[in-house]
Image: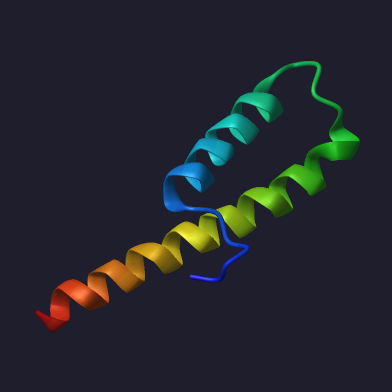
Length: 60
């Protein structure tokens, strides 16, 4: 994983925080794209981590 990529647990926590934020009725729609883009980056980071772990397991 890249040095500036968050750890899996940190990324997952931030994804949950973003979901909580955007589910609020008073969440400003003009910030939705920004939050969704960040969530997408975090999801991609988590998927990459899981793929790397799966690859390691399959090698054993």
